[in-house]
Length: 343
Image (cartoon, rainbow, N blue to C red; front, side, top):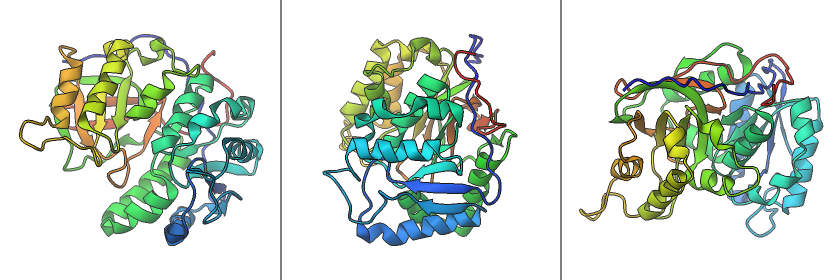
């Protein structure tokens, strides 16, 4: 099946492309930094500096500091985040890790600061909420990428040397180029779960965060899913939870509107494929989609399972599931602009 999205879309709000020497700040936007992961954070700094950026740690990124499961209270995190958004010297913010806190400060983010000086916010997991909310409210392109400590300083370091070099080049291009990246490097795990080709805007993140966000006043309007390519991954829980989340998206009308789906490698999900009577993830996805004839590409590196390929929320992509191909058709960064969803 070949589909092409034709409904009008709001223009994405692209951050200004970074230049060598620009300042990237690593911040605790959700969970705390545990002392044993300090070396991983140090390695993440090395990776970012090797890309040509200056790097600074935000004050709340202090090993051992925490409040419950968070780096600080939601108000404190929002205050520091807003300071970074307002600081013209800061050209990008990368989350140190995910966590469980972003829901607590979605209403405290300085949206006008985002519109006035859009900058890349990098990360995944709990940071998916920030990408979705800021895209919904301002059109800001969300940089769904690896986190600093478990990603750049963790998973990347155990990857083969050639893969690390490939990722560094990919991330550097994502942040500094105003030209489309084009085809993402396909991995051996990629599988065609339903054939077809489509083009559409990327929307997605952690599956449970997509569902949670749609229950808030910051939910993406349904028409924003028209023709979109929905990407998602999930960490933990049970296979039945994944099925239930997909059913929520079906009841919400989202699965009827999207033109394609990209599914990440599942991580620590119980009840997938064992014992024998348990479904695999492909079966769960196709069961939820029913007779919706859209391309589905499965087991893509876009989540907790390891080094992440970038998935810039709000940019246009081409998906060919049968060919196991996914291409970024637009740049995530560009000249400074204040063009948003209402333009």
